[in-house]
Image (tube, rainbow, N blue to C red; front, side, top):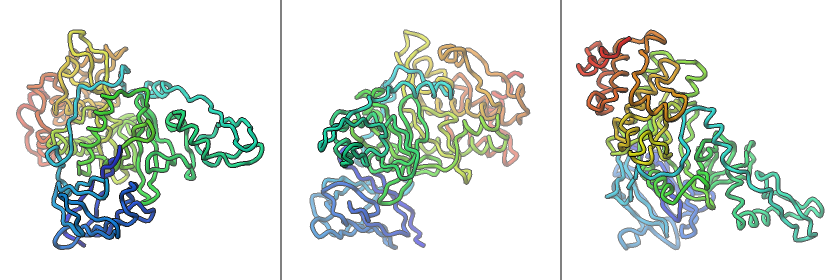
Amino acid sequence: MSALPAARIVFEFGTTTQIVELDPDEVYIVGRGEDANPCVNEKSVSRRHLRITCDNDGWLLENISNTSGIQHKRRMLQTLRPEHGEAFSLGRVKCTFAEHGKFLGAQEGADINIDQDLMATETIDSDDSETDAAKTQVVEPPPQPLVYCPVCGTKVQIIDFVSIEDLNCPTCRAHIGRLAVRHLDASGIYDSILLTSKPTDKGSTLSIGEYRITEELGAGGMGKVFKGFEPGSNQVAAVKLLYPNKTTAAFIQSFENEARALARLFHKNIVKIYRFGKHGNVHYIAMEFVRGTNVKKQIKDNRRLTIDKCTEILRQSLVGLDYIHKQQIIHNDVKPSNILVAEDGTVKLVDFGIVQLSGPVDQDKRAHVAGTVEYLSPEVVQGGSPTFQSDLYALGITLYFMLCGRRPFKGQTPKDTLIMHLEKTADHPSHHRGVPDELIAILARLMAKDLKHRYQTATQVLDDLDSIDLGHSLDRATLQMGKKWKK
């Protein structure tokens, strides 16, 4: 076994960014051939282009192409021992090497500029399943397209989009599947089909980018999520598509900037990003498929979670937030449905906030608010920009939901809920169940409306949790917040 840690290579070509994790105990053959692992499907890459191995001296890249090589600093190399952040090219594919646990920032080739004020939709995001169901009706189904058989002239209506490539003329049995795909693609209908079809079997021919789709996992106000796999490597992924009619140029730029930043994160409590790009007119992002469930579903199934489970989910979520905050990234949409719990108990943060909201409380404030209504911090509701402390406030609301089985603030309308964040004090958790005083104090400080009284960093919260485990006293500021929360 190698003592060296894992690494990543980021491949960028066209509108696609592909991220490959490297295990030091494995040998990788990079190319565009079907037997390559990983498969980089760009014509300028040879079918077998690059061998990647790891030895005692570090990672080694070896050219195995007869027609090309490794382009590095305007030179064509046969071998390269890359350092963290080092860039090279394979044909027209730009590549960046990253060591495990290290962040690729803007100074190392990634043009990262996440603008939290970029707006995309006028639909207010709510954490209610009923609202999510309503949002899935926003996208109009595509018209039932017609294709004329070139052999007998029969008019064929396309109904089964999943197996469209296997389509035959019902009259003369001529194969017209490829003709149908070209017709739909040229007319712009095919992009809508991707978002309205419902693949149900493993033999589905529906594809998004390099991924073959096997089933639909869910839908929301901005798009759909599918389960798929990459045939070359059999890598299973969750593939998220954005509805074309719900995006703007500014939103797409924000989406790509965010995906590019997240793709360079290495942490067990953050869902990994494999690839993002464009399929037709539909933008997509492929990420780690987590076998498990999210916290929202766990609460729905159990009404509320045990104290130990709440504490463990809180702790691992804080570790993930601490990591991204140190990379100067704000999650911006912490909520139960964006916290996944894998089958082995590992907690992973997902769906960093690219969905933007409208509907401010005060028209004199900025025109848009980012996040999910039930989890917005008071400073964001008042028009301020999200901060690390905003993430901590949202995590506090999530902890309250886990402990009590209900949200602390839920108005009749989204606007009522926003006002409650500003003015209302949440019911004491003891009204709903017995909760240790120390955990109540931590919750009170997480949900403090005044930034001066709220935790400044995730590390401070983790220190208080460690104090509980060790039997030590909590931080004085935390104890004071707990005492102020009247039963």
